[in-house]
Length: 418
Image (cartoon, rainbow, N blue to C red; front, side, top):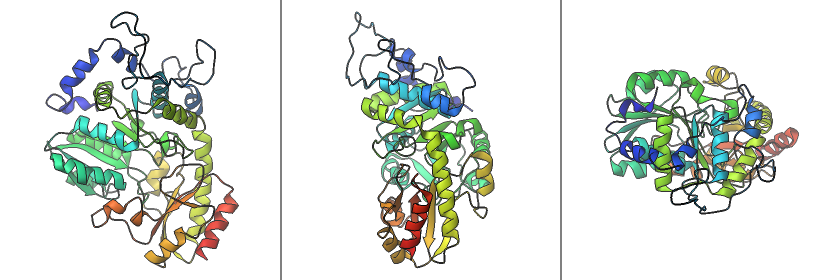
């Protein structure tokens, strides 16, 4: 499925033509993600090498940080390598974008200043007044806030449903108005799992784009584009960066035409990743596979321990056989991830107290770093959804399980739970 089904009379079509006509820059920016990379390379080989050829001047094996705003032109309009101004393109960001496209199996990627900046660019590119989007009833609080507090004022409507129920998703589609199905799998913070291939079928039937937020799974554990998705969204702040030291976001697309439209809006709106942020993110990608293996192993042990604890009423982790989406996750993922949520049997007060009692698990928002984090979603990351259909349980605790020694993580939680 391509995005061209409803482009003709939709925002961005004419702008995309203008962007493609821009001398030099467009040709550079649409370079194939795997150019120069042998076919058949595995994930880690791509993560370490895609877009990252040794520097031709010095032989440096790590791409330089091009901390520069503008570039010398060889005559008016004579751009070296297509670079003119770093909002439009920067060599360090290009390396990151080519690597992201390669590890997600896409034709093109774009790097942004944050995950929400990436979401905003995508939505403003494909939506117009009167359009409709179907979103999960357990979406990330920031995504919900974007739809409910920003896009509603511009005439965009949305419906929240259980994306684990394909019939409910199909029933929520408004023919001729629904432009996108927006799914997180696994979802934040309830770890819901959605059938990407099944949703892709609904999207094809209804003429909508299938957008998959792949932040929790990462490209290492899940490949939405290969399963039929049109766009993958990432908060690269999380597992892709992996060290809690950089904020960023990304879009990866299957269709080059949609990629051109998104790139035009990326340049026009300007919320791009800076060169140092791009460099840090690219460094994180190199170890993504080995980190995710450890995250998954530790999270599985934590989930099992919690499932056997008397003060835990429910554990939400796709790796547990009793999880509602376990079979789908096992089919479309190569591992179950590093995120674990659970409900405290003692209620909200006990859940909040627990979040302040751990030592190795640091109380803080965000996720996906090498260090373990704990938080209370209802009062922290998902406070914006309070009182809405997306409100999370008050007794819910979310863990981002890091790569510390497993025995220490288990002991910390056991002590905090008492």
